[in-house]
Length: 196
Image 1 (cartoon, rainbow, N blue to C red):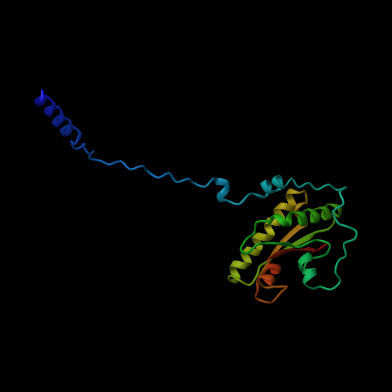
Image 2: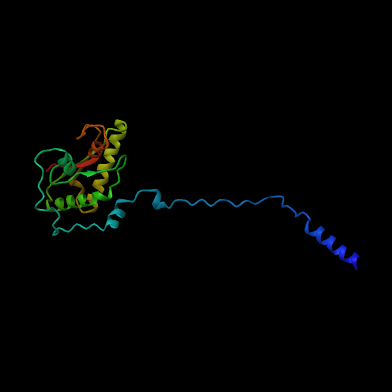
């Protein structure tokens, strides 16, 4: 009986300590790389932004406040409202190296559209401007893109295309000539010039 018990114990140890067979090819899980969604990769189209903001232009809605006083002196405060443009049309400002419309500029666009709808004989020139950083050629192209982006929005809101001209000045016509972020921010804009 003792022999049988020893034999069972020895067999147990032999089989339990046996080497496991290692597969010849080790499978490693392939990492799953999540691709960015299409809408995350490219900037939203103008139409999507307009729908997202649910901006409506109602001819009866009072947009310009009667108490708003247009500054007489063309200084920094004036520039922040109108740029080099024709009051009461407001300048549209842009982030560095961008031509997509900032969220905080949609109310300005709405006011400009309202004014243009109420004055159907007025024609405007959209003048694209940049700050001094970047090459002249790059800034001319960027200024043109900014003006074209605003033109697209105006057309979507019902302003006839033949009432809108675009031009780019790039970095050639800065309002503020100091080399700091405060000045650069003023120079990155599209001006609305009335050209009847």
